[in-house]
Length: 306
Image (cartoon, rainbow, N blue to C red):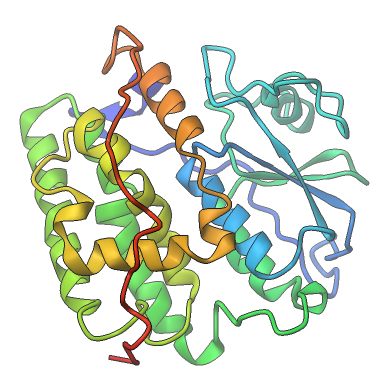
């Protein structure tokens, strides 16, 4: 299925098919009611990982249920380890096709299922976290952080666009490229952005100062997978995360927050990537390394707003 996403040797990500929204006032037809929706994720997937982080940071565990697929995906797509307890599905594809029998393409996570209409509301991963942050505000835990503050949204969106294009999706553009120029273009853009982020984090604790925002949620999953997967498997091997003093300490700082570290499953991550892309890793052998101490002191608590 990856081959269907290559154009001129360049990886082209599949557009999202389901793009409805859940709204606080219900004007979209999907009101933000606790217990109504089910989030489907893979611990291996960076796009799904960010939804798990936000769900936990905001205390939405009781309001939004979650179903986790097996880390190994084959030609049939994502499979549940056991039949999903809410929908009864064995494969995620069943939910896609019941929502749209004409659907063609990959069956992606994350996606949100509505238990009332029994259809997928959205697989629009860039919007799911901000939807949780804004439309579900009435259901956030007391003292939950404002991850998408109104006064910073334009700046957060601008940085997120750069990070998505060159880092989050950039590693895929490098890893799945089938032409040398496409690979090098993605490779160079990736490390140019990582270098700029290293500088940005020299004097500030998080990307927007002394508080975690949506921007940190989006960057972290790529950093968590970088040395274990992207450096070798996707040929992003100019520098490792551990070679960036600020980025590596920043990643450990986030990992120490339960919503980040508690949703990071390196076993799922490595088994998925090394076992799901036979055109890159035909043997399916999963590397034992790297040895990284994610719990080492990060030494960033003293940093301010930058």
